[in-house]
Amino acid sequence: MKIPYGKQWIDEKDIKEVVKILENDWITQGPMVEKFEQKVAEYCGVKYAVAVNSGTAALHAAYFAAGLKSEDEIITSPITFTATSNAALYLGAKPIFCDIDIKTYCIDIEKIEEKITDKTKIITPVSYAGYPVNIDKIKEIADKYNLIVIEDAAHALGAIRNGKKVGIDADMTILSFHPVKHITTGEGGMILTNDEKYYEKLKLFRTHGITKDKNKMLKNDGAWYYEMHELGYNYRIPDILSALGYSQMDKLEMFIERRNYIAKRYNEAFRNNHKITIPPVVDNNSRHAYHLYPLLINDKNKRKYVFDRLREEGIYAQVHYIPVHLQPYYQKNLGYKKGDYPIAEDFYSKEISLPMYPKMTEEEINYVINTVDKILKEI
Ligand SMILES: Cc1ncc(COP(=O)(O)O)c(C=O)c1O
Image 1 (cartoon, rainbow, N blue to C red):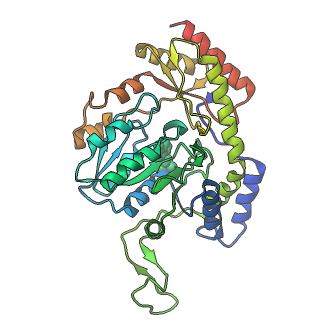
Image 2: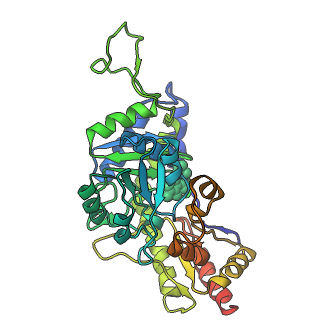
Image 3: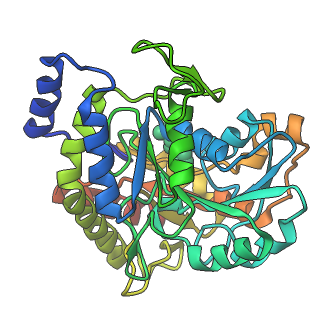
């Protein structure tokens, strides 16, 4: 058996929707982009959504829309994919990390204030693995210091926090549609916001900073005319991919239910094994989106053994994440060093992400559980 840690679920309907677009006149920015945006915005309960061609582009655009500039600082978690902080570097800003809370695996909210300086502009919490980080508390801190909150919800589409879908609470929320995520467009991302001011900036940034809106242009030479008002990028997502995302949205609730079912099976199987720690669960009024199932091997010296044995048995587990501050680029250029964020480093040394994707069969789930059990008896 060969089981990856994550994979997409594409069905006949998805394929038909994409083929329909290929047979149309519009294959890039046509009507599907807006339809896809509206569907996600409606699902999450937000006013505006801007689709782009990756989660990384979504972060870059959100930081831009928030007005992030050279010398500014953002505060984020070191347990994330490098894109969360890299996108701040694109704008010349400095990522300041804040250690994680071992109760949530997300940023330690109690430590955020220590990291705020007069250069801080944005707090970017990451809802790691799909656990909906407590944005209300983070917003309280942000409001006190006049900061903007951008939630990196690349792992958390469909997660619910105190009865509200992820996307509602932060100033802006970013999503990723990479194939291992909750829905996929191949590559793709989106920014959600309730603020029209951000929405307008995001749309400009996605298309070279160019506008064709007569009300915004300084003059109008004719029907061909457009103006560039900002230095933007080509971050457009094509209609072909938007059609796939639009179709995938119909399966999102089923996908998340499947992920929660798999997590429940793992939790039941592993809860009482003292050699491992299962991931944090959420309270009744919330819902975990389980992009990942991060299992901790309590004896960190045994993590590599367990990982290698899983691969030998055909289980392609992963590790999420190597703390960003330990990356050579960050150490060389930003001065970070080993020991700076001990909780994140300890977490990294123990973590293994078990297979977690909606299409996992009962046979595959049972195989993972039995194989983990077997390997744990060897340590
Ligand atoms: C937490 C987090 N943020 C941002 C990204 C970037 O998304 P993308 O791969 O769509 O650019 C990822 C992707 O893996 C991620 O996991």
